[in-house]
Image 1 (tube, one colour):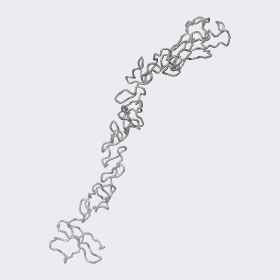
Image 2 (image 1 turned 180 degrees about the vertical axis):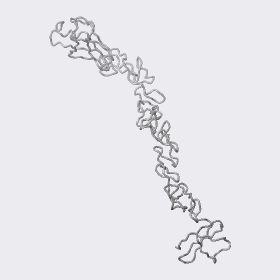
Image 3 (image 1 turned 60 degrees about the horizontal axis):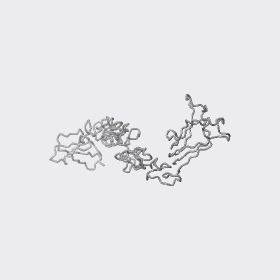
Image 4 (image 1 turned 180 degrees about the horizontal axis):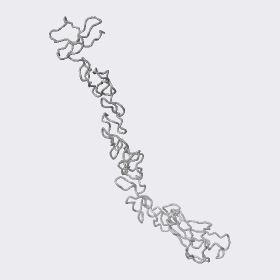
Length: 388
């Protein structure tokens, strides 16, 4: 309120008020403050007693204090090491019956009836007698409250700093709202809150990358200050490890048998190169199998009964093929052979003839001269196979 005067009623116990009543000694040296907080030192000192004596201090005291405030504070003290005038009590006492405060409760008015508007339009409260502005409305400053807050300040007394308004512009001089939005990394109407919940950037619309241990990235540019989780790289930790690498700082190399490994733990989740299997493609195909996913079976390799097998990658037979099959995989019958069959006998042999005189099979062949063709050099026979 805009205060005019304050009246204090001391305790008397209805006895004669003089130097012998026992109370006057306790009130000597008192002070009266008006403040907008409960801290007297932040307020205005309206009165400090340094003249009253036991004979002159009144039982009812009035002081004029034309200021604006929320709290009236009565204060007295008796400090150790301080010598006080004669008549002062050894201890401080506050024995008041009543404190009356007179003034205008409605801000922006003055006069005996509190009915006259303060002359300055942006004045919040003025001197109750003269109308001189004693405090501006929030957002204004100057002797007549004619100036808005500047230098990125706002509010009551222009004592509050603007938040992180876009391009460091002035916020609204009354409310502090950043009318053009916030700088990257900040949010709220006042732009005084940093991005959180793993967001960053303009309006906190960007999502942090894979920062180590799930930490919040830097709220302005998204940099992961503690580094990246395993499998990611770059300042923002949004880039996967390059092909062939995985783990923390992408410093581990995938097995060279992988078609491509998991960027976090190195498992070969994109499959293995032909001839390999297992989570990390660390195992060769078992004997008798080769190729992609170890799904192809070896051909007709020689000495298969003696654990001879094909190559786990390409299926080639290291010791050659069984008779009648073509290297390297021993899966195809020699291409320049024809098959001839004996009629109907249970002891029929499958007879092959060739135009290649160098190809021989060490088996016994039955001669069929009546079927010989003049254009061929010889018969070559395969092992016996019954007619189906």
